[in-house]
Length: 290
Image (cartoon, rainbow, N blue to C red; front, side):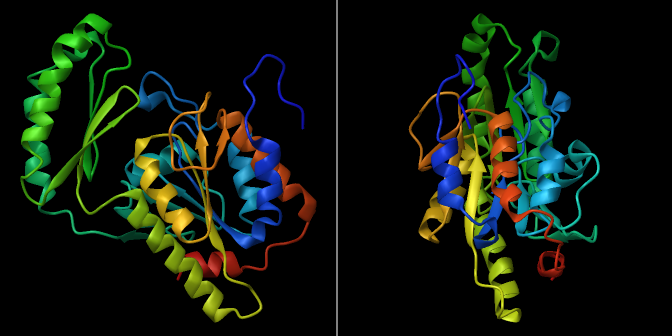
């Protein structure tokens, strides 16, 4: 597969060789920046062309999950038609959607609601949404986006936004403050993509125990942002692999890089294609459905 003319090189070929047979892996994908290009407003995010079809084809032969910071209902809506056999995990690991459509809470978030309500009100009194600030409420977190805000206003207001968020870190049930691409996020502590990946790996291990003819898998995690680094670290500790989605090399736990979501789609197709029309055995669906 040749690199697109004029585009920065990445690790597509080396990664394809590293993966080999996808049935050896539990493939875990972030959504924003990995399956969907980054956009100015999160409500405008849609999967890259061919992404849903590539996921559906791959999920016929191996475990595939999407692990996102988005709320689960929002993630489902972004996917459009959720492919069979696909497990969705939203809120950085707060809740899962099984392939049969059932939702399974993975944490108890009742204590977080009052704190997030108060912080949301404080933030809306701090920023001017008419100039591009976006306060995004999720079940486990509160994100403040400033991608569309003029730089002078970001410099003037962002320190105050950070203060409001940091002041709530010790409020029940406890929070952590995360930075990302033009976003600050206050998230319930004890919920992160690393812990969620540990849960996903346990689900795959349970499948292997019940199906001795199917060897255990290791996780392959693809993500683009700071919140994915926890999952990268866990994947490598479990003997798996981590892939950063970024235009240029940056500091990361990941050992491979793809430059954009279009290259992710190319990879998914490339590792699925050698298996031809092999039908689904149903074991993936059974595993994710518990």
